[in-house]
Length: 286
Image (cartoon, rainbow, N blue to C red):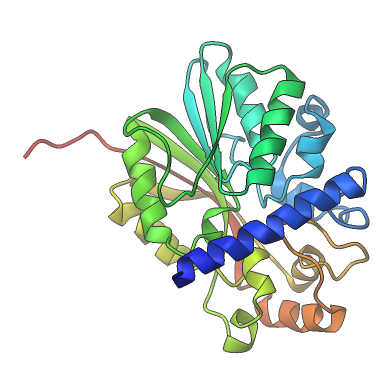
């Protein structure tokens, strides 16, 4: 088995454990509450929007932003969510596209697929389909999607260029993306060698300039960062679980507090959550 497959297997195992923990703790993805002010600032979900969703979809969310916000989802759109998890963004999108629209979720972790399907059913949505698959080889027809969203997932891919190419493939002409993700400047080896940090959305992150260039090379245009939050050391420490109970952003938690604080000091100002927008241009005939 090659390294990309090993990475995907490890990430899937981590998120399976995390989503099972939410069930065991009755609605918290860690043993305690998320630090106030960190996740809400990061994600930008309104209380009203979250109150309308099944509690499990909210509790089992491991995102770093809100790709649905400002995505200009239209009634009747077909929306694809890469790494849809327990379904929080799927359900928000399903409400916006209405009964004439369609929302497709793709996740490689069977436990997440099961959870998302159950949450869609609990919310009463019949326009949601959740598929098991990898984002480097999407089980979606070419040119079938009006909008691709994703929440803190592409940074986990060991083959990001394949993901960017898949974005272009599945989009209709004029189709667009609204993606929240983690980017980071190059890190010292002592941090990248901590395997847990890959699932925690840190060590797999690439620089912002490289991320945007990858989207452009895949054929997307008007690639731009619409929102950005650069983490300071306190936010990084909280996101990695230094506070009691951890924060639940991505698959973090479980590292010794002293190690987390050292990493937070090293990475302060070098890691950011961004929301990227772009679209597929009109096809140019040769």
